[in-house]
Image (cartoon, rainbow, N blue to C red; front, side, top):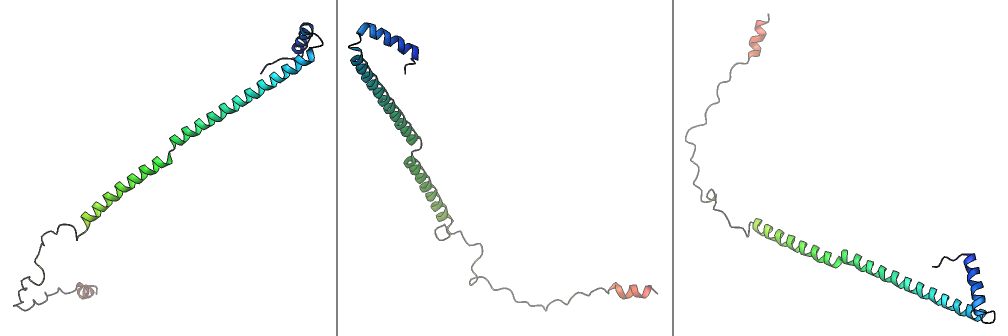
Length: 140
């Protein structure tokens, strides 16, 4: 608080001894010591209260920045939005709820019968002779 060295204290003591006198000097010194003690106590109390208030303000600021309840609400709203979008897309893709398109071909029971085969199946085409026996004959 006050930066008073040894020689400054000696000078203050000599001046106090001359001004106050040797009879009243011990009482005045005690009173001055009490005042200095009270002043230090008040300063330390005020300092600790100010520091505590600053910490409280910092915590409030931190809480306001990281408001988990608000973040939870935003996340919950996003989940609900995604859920409703997912439900609507599932309902539109569900064949039971989707509009049924017209069939491309009639059902099997009502389809016209296939024409009966009136001609006999075609005979297999003549296969050409394999070149292997002919190639063996030319080797000699």
